[in-house]
Length: 128
Length: 162
Image 1 (tube, rainbow over the protein chains, first blue to last red):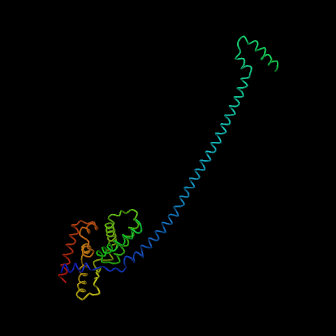
Image 2 (image 1 turned 180 degrees about the vertical axis):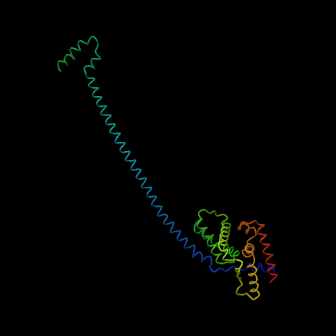
Image 3 (image 1 turned 90 degrees about the vertical axis):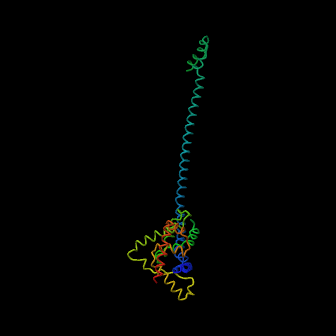
């Protein structure tokens, strides 16, 4: 068999298929691509909901934190008011103490004790 | 991989893959099914593919698909009995001599072993080099050369007989 003749024949030859690749693309792959696009759209719609749930979760967390912070603030302000009352009382008491006869007596010199006793303590006892 | 990139690959390689399976099986429907399945699988795996060696990957997929099909259908079908068909570009101007030559060639190629035939026709009809065939089919160059030699021997022997 002539080799060059055969090579020429095979080089020019081709295989004829019943369907061309373009027909197969139209029948099989273009449908596949279209359904794939629809699937990806569906997927994006589904993926919207988890994101929404996530944002709800974040909002709820923020609300809880704000609530906790508010109650903490209220507790602290009550405590500080209480502390102020205690301070005021002690201040008044201190003023009373300061003005009391007993307190004054602490600063009296020894030679003035009799005079102080006659002037303040004896008078106070008489008053009561 | 984008749809446009996939379409490019399809346009570039679909016919080569389909012809390769036809060279092996002499079955047009099977060749089309195998090529189609390969590209469907390629589309499914498009996100994990590297752009390098896609052609080799397609040949590998096609070979595996063909072997699987062949194993399943082994009892029902004998590929050797399929008639291998080649069309000529000069079909309209074919004279009796060319028609006879084509028939003779088709008969010889039908009798050739599928491995030898696929390698031989990939070289002669698709114009692939020995190293390209070796690369795409995952064979050594020596293995491809051996198949080519066997094909030549068979063709010369059969042509001498008829």
